[in-house]
Length: 475
Image 1: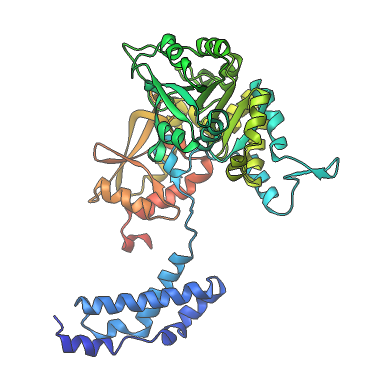
Image 2: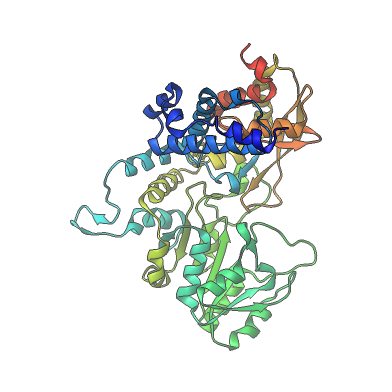
């Protein structure tokens, strides 16, 4: 272990920043890596070497050579230069994986995003009249045509949609909601918190498992601005339970002159039973047909589009919501609208939507087709020092949607020689692009339901990189 004096002697051999920057390998970076990034990498590498000396991890001046520092700086610079938001291969079988970005977009939506981003657009410009237009005009007609709504507007996510509606229709007034519907959505955002931020007042009725129409009726005596029904899309209450129907709430709302809002959360345009699921999820159109005055839902869940909060309903309520000053703070940009328009147009033919929207096609894929894909792909891994087997399991919709839906699937299970499932899982995440799977019974499992055909080549390369030792990769 180096003494204090020997540490000082070693530190004298640390290369200077200018010396490392002048190294040929570092100089070669400037064609593809920004200058400031390279300089930061060089400084960070020299600091790292200094720390290793002080921690007695380096006791040889050769390990402080310019070549060594340059090699480390090059690796750091390339890592720093990678985008922070990166492509990830989702092999978990969770279709709407919130942490991995939820709905992947269809090709047409990606093309429309690129077109909108490449130059100017008619975002708020009416080309025919030459006057200012509304960005809602880009998608309102499509939304109304698909759902039967009188009017529509769009904000940046469903929590924003809920808050905006509450702020508009029930500011400083009571909002009646069942205790069993005070849900928490992702990231610890809770309905009571959103309600508080909106400036409305929570009026809880009923109990966790049973809320009757009379509970709502008794709450109508005060200063009530809204009746709110929250669809529990991320959990279900089963057994001894009861809830007031939307039809009943609408009748009560008409009787008391109070609008009814339904927060659908996930929201779907097509019947989920058409995708092979046994559970019926109420569609947006069904809720509106039932008489709801305002309906909100997410764009990047069962709709299969970009992140957005969609607000539909009666024209006079939507107009009030649209003119709320808060709407400007929550509005969406041109890239979101470009993608949303493309996705909504796909729904003009439901069969095409199920086939072409990745979210719907992943949910609709049957066990047999997943099994065939898994077995074909496994054939490409025969030469690896790993045992490949197949496990019958279930995929999940995810994203706080359809919590009871189990989608039969077949997993590829990998068990590498001398490597634990945990280590193998970590190595897969270190690949480029990273691969995220799941561990089942001490085996790394991959569900191809959520892996596109275009990703299979990258998936194979990642598996090889994770299974093979560094010395073997070059063989």
